[in-house]
Image (cartoon, rainbow, N blue to C red):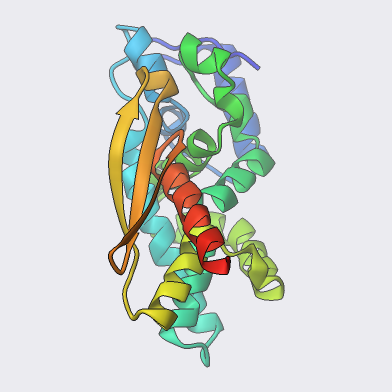
Length: 243
């Protein structure tokens, strides 16, 4: 679904209705609706429109920290007998790109995104990285608008189900987590990831990452962002260890 662009500090009536519907469906209540709009503003649309001046990357940065805090606090209080290592594994799965992208689709983030033409034409509305980043941006924007308690309540509405799902099926752990556990168990070291190169325009970047494990380098493997490339090369390393 395409949406109308907005002039700075001015949101069209149709865009405002879309945002209000998103709030209603997800138990949000922004005092300043422009902050929610900002959370949906991908850098690609700003790059293509001179009248737009800010994208969602700064509020995404903030939202990432708030999500980590809420998740860690919940796990600490909920699972009092779990070790630090086990809690870290669960948190890693909950805040992973794959998990947040799935949440983004369930929330309806894809319907509200503001994307540039290039990103739109390459399927940006369904890209895991964009969806996951937007979920974090919404969290950051809501924290700025309504504070920690309201943001915590919003996060827990969906985060608890993700945690319980992971507890019931630990096999859902991402490749990076699995590789780190294996390396610490066998070699007492952590994998070291390195970006080899990146290519392509801003709206369609490709990243190449390698991983060094106890002096053995695997990869490189590619992805649409660093996290995806790291997951790809971690999978390669795991497959080699299994062989």
